Amino acid sequence: MKLICHPISPYARKAMILARLHGIELEEVQPEKDGANGYVAGDNPLGKIPALEWQPSQYLFDSPVICQYLDSLGKEPILPADGHTKFLNLWQHALGDGLADAVYNYRYEIVRPPDLHWNEMIKRHETAIIRSVETLEKICEWIGGPWTYGNLAIITALDYASYRAAHLNWQESAPKLAKWHSGFKADPHYQSTYGYPDETS
Ligand SMILES: N[C@@H](CCC(=O)N[C@@H](CS)C(=O)NCC(=O)O)C(=O)O
Image 1 (tube, protein in one colour):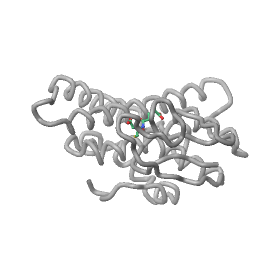
Image 2 (image 1 turned 45 degrees about the vertical axis):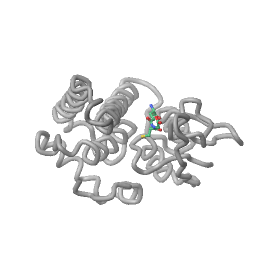
Image 3 (image 1 turned 180 degrees about the vertical axis):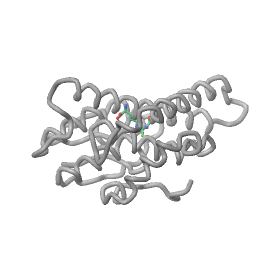
Image 4 (image 1 turned 60 degrees about the vertical axis):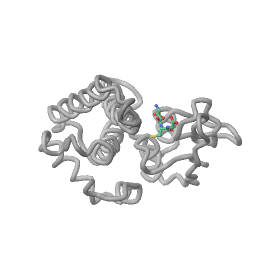
């Protein structure tokens, strides 16, 4: 199966980790952007990655759907089939994705020319990042490890936050979360999908 992806994308990286966890071989293809069309490879009308070619020339998106599909192919899916734990995992996954969304939106505000900066919106996204991290700091004792369907999105979003919103230094404001996060750094799937140029940025 072909995954249109990029390791800097926290959404794509979730799928890359999940495939490795389940021993699913993916052809990871890094697309070019096509101006206002976004990423056209992957046939996603929204022009976004990741997209997974799950049937010939048919693509699944967005990342929670791709992750659930890949997980369903695993011998031991990490998303519980039902019950309270399933929804706790989905909630954690949504919190991780929401943090990634806030970082992504923050990034696209600040790359505008300075006279087009909308400071209120920049603050809005920064606040969402800070509040998500505060929530994660409160719950980090039960987010668990190694990989769960929930913490997959949290780990990948935190790395993205370190890279794209380094000035907020989430590790300093959330020391328990930072410790929990560092526990994943020795994981082979964490390492083989880590796509940021500088680990410390
Ligand atoms: N909700 C989507 C978000 C995907 C997303 O925003 N991907 C970014 C890359 S990190 C993208 O493709 N951006 C290109 C664009 O919007 O032009 C998902 O979970 O898959």
